[in-house]
Length: 479
View 1 (cartoon, rainbow, N blue to C red):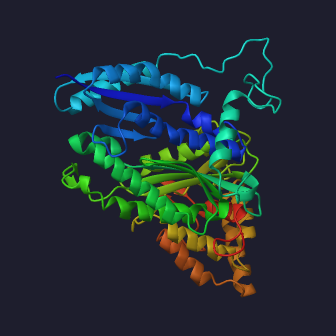
View 2: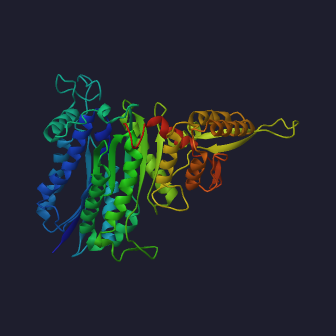
View 3: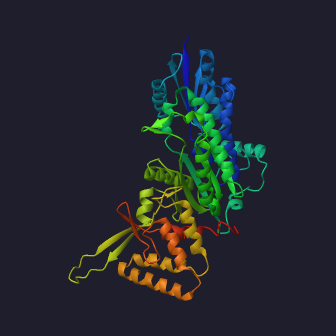
């Protein structure tokens, strides 16, 4: 008897959820995306936990069917149901005929077919012609007198049916006293290497991983202002008070590793001849004003997560963050060039040498790791931030020091010495404690030496510290 491996991939989820700054629409869109899991269960007849469902989370579906008639009905009707329920979302499908049990070859063939289908253009259901009146916020066809298009109407109506916690109705309810929020994107490491080795354990592993991620989020968000947007599989996207962002990510990463260490399906799975005992994850945090265009912040959070993965080689849990100060986000390389690189003129001993030489100093000191003795850790960084928040700290003067680096390396050195002298004389701030905190970040750091060489690049953590101070109040105190 023939069997069939079915795959579906939903596109446009990020744009569908994050194209607006209205929190009600974001939450409603998120709930619609979550309901896609139930939609597939309803049309397939496979309930949660059915061994024939290999994957059903975050817009990715893989399942095995024995009945060709049921499969044909799904291929014919499932995309229509999804696209009508969530205007703006499209879906790609593919099928591979298999023998009794699927193999990695079958999975690879399915992925190839899905990739081909994703490259085919689709016509959105909310396309317009010139005679239609358009919603002012989305430029999509207007459907009522509330300035709503079809997708917005679906999101708001869904929000009304599911919203029970009235605490966070708008982004301003989540932001801190500086009107700052944080958009966080977290993604698991190494799933691409692990999944092909799971074989028939893929279905149960997917369920276990989903539960582990949700448990880690629930633990990390306690006593914090956090709004879940996407939590499924190994993917997490949340909005939170800027004060809570670093502590939320740190607690999530710690608990994600603990929860995934309990996944029995990982027993016997080896990568590079090393037994996998737990999963790690990387995170990107984009700090922004509550009124900043949301899709830019989400895009940056995903970019930062990718940078963290690259720097850690997907082998450790870590995070990258950035405080958005520009009007839009082009690329991380552009941010590095425009905001995070200081070209400090080097004073020449030979006055006859007219050519100016520069020392390049990078201000992106991360990633910050959950637990790594050779790399800066999240907790050590947080300790330094809180130390610089104390009364009498030289944080405001260090802003001047960063500015002076653009003018002269020698003058900045003189200024740093002067800053340390003034701080010592004031007696309000303990530089010895700060030195210990800085050395915990990197052994070569101290109040007298704020620039160290990392991977052949001169870097300073001061910019990162000052950015957190400028966007937050206190992690332990008043928000």
